[in-house]
Length: 456
Image (cartoon, rainbow, N blue to C red; front, side):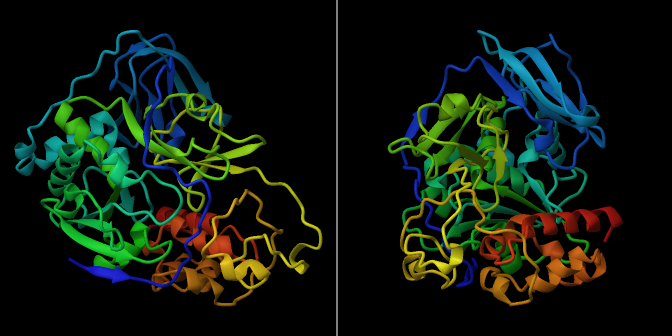
């Protein structure tokens, strides 16, 4: 077991933290799947409008990897297939049937997973589409099922606000989580690493005494909870390496599939943030693909809001009138802030958040909860080498030089500077503190795409 920590980073105390209470959301009469949610695939539809599907029936495949199918989250009839620019498939909407018929997948006894053949486990994950819960590094893509990773990392700690609390998601799911871990052990010839928060003393026994894995502890402010930081300290990536990663709450979904022989109909997600009304910030058990208005209506404060899938540091904006994404780990709601402040940075800023000493409020910024909105508090400015980013990067990465290499399209220098060890989310804290207001996350995403296209 490895124990590692960092002091680099910053813990953002965003207001509206979700409670541990779990509420049930049901009553939905439709579900939707977004093919564009799965980065790197080229979808080919297997259904058309008017077709009937079961829960778990394939909706589309990946043209580049035809054995990888993506299944329906519920049974019903295909109502609409929405297309975007250049006929890209944007959304498949399903009208739910009164009786939910399910597609049958092989079910395992927990003990049998210890000796299950890799090909059999991979087949279930590809035909169900649940391979998409795993992420292949580098490049953060859906894994190639033909490639055996050198190791697999399970992330059971979060330092950014707000993801699903793993202690809440684990309630009643100990067997499913352990089944998922045993299945991962069949997918690699290396080790499965489970990373837990080192400063949490009340974790479920299913986490602290998990079988078939190497358990590690990590501590520190955000982004100490990012998987890249764990890989960097436990089993670093070098050119030619392939590592798979997965969130612990997503692994529960895989375990449920393997034990029950059918795709789960729902999952637990957290709802929090300054835009959530008092008492509404908690965890919800929601049907996968359900309309978000079932979850959001009546739970938000007044005014225009931005809904983020995941955390405000590395999440993606989604439409409030959309549907729950397949890989939703929580929803964070913040105000759509377009306000302007008199005197700007020249004012005392007693009630304004600051990560530097620009305002008098800096000395309470690390202790107070803040109602932050979407404003970036300034426009794009020239990039200046200050070394500021290094305060928020816990890995041995020179962020300034890496970003400059990507901007200059110098992929060879970017590789030498460690871009293969990173994921765009690792630069979210740097971007949050950036005085130049640069989209560091987008820049690094572009750099990884260039390296992937050119080859290592």
